[in-house]
Picture 1 (spheres, rainbow, N blue to C red):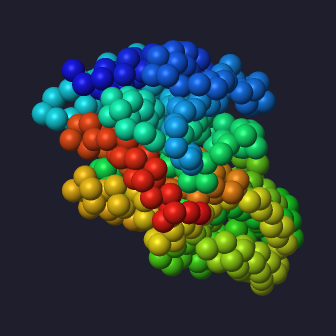
Picture 2: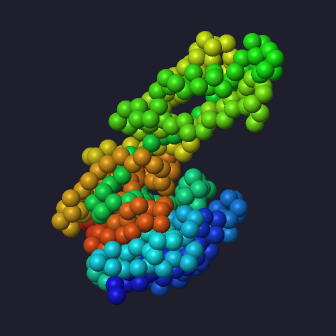
Length: 376
Ligand SMILES: [Zn+2]
């Protein structure tokens, strides 16, 4: 069995979840040391977020100048205990009662395999930095609490995206949580309803023609939570709340939408004779890395060498690459062959996955050979 596959199976069988990545971290630290990595340390991010494990950082030292960072996350979604991987017809899946945790132990195994292949190649190379995070699935908490001041790399690849090898996530949206509270007037529903004003109806009027769903090719909004009243039918409703989110690759479009949302809510509420109060908070920062950037050109050159078609696309969600860009690195997400992540249908195509170590190794060698053309 290929080492990348046995590493992967060993890690998915080690029970873990966000805030408890201990077993995976312990396995990974041993493997990194065996491969010859140095500066291996686990930071104190776990304590900061209420977990029992920190982010694991390591360096695979090179003799040539430059450094490049590869990242994956060690936590996984719930339903990830007792995973029994099933390999059949070139696909790894589960028995259907758990996730597979290829999101993102596939990424971790790929990085380990890349280092192994680099070592076996015997070729001189630059330094490789490895960052394996915790609590990615809990709002990128591990990468939020990592101290980037010691990182040398200017380019970072997050091996954490669904899809076949070749898919490059060049953008990820900025996001915000939005809510509108609606205040009406209570009255007895049977004896004097004309003295009341229904906040529930006010909320319905707000939602009726609110722009939401797909706003444009890079922006979305969704308001799935609507609550009203106090559980009784014999009073006119005096309170309702609408909760949702908006996202856009373009930060200005997101801010414009928030403005629109606030105006829309205020106007519709006033028009119906109730009042509204809008509040919002920004989520993790988005990013957009140009197709002609060093990070995209480098990985595209590697895919060309491998006979893989590069597929640069925008992501609908967030990942650690969001924080790496925010912290001054140029970072994109890379697919490692998994599909239907976050479900018990999660599966991995071996033909993609088994080449991800090669992808990592070739990226280091290509960068080492031409540092001047991949200058950030
Ligand atoms: Zn992930």
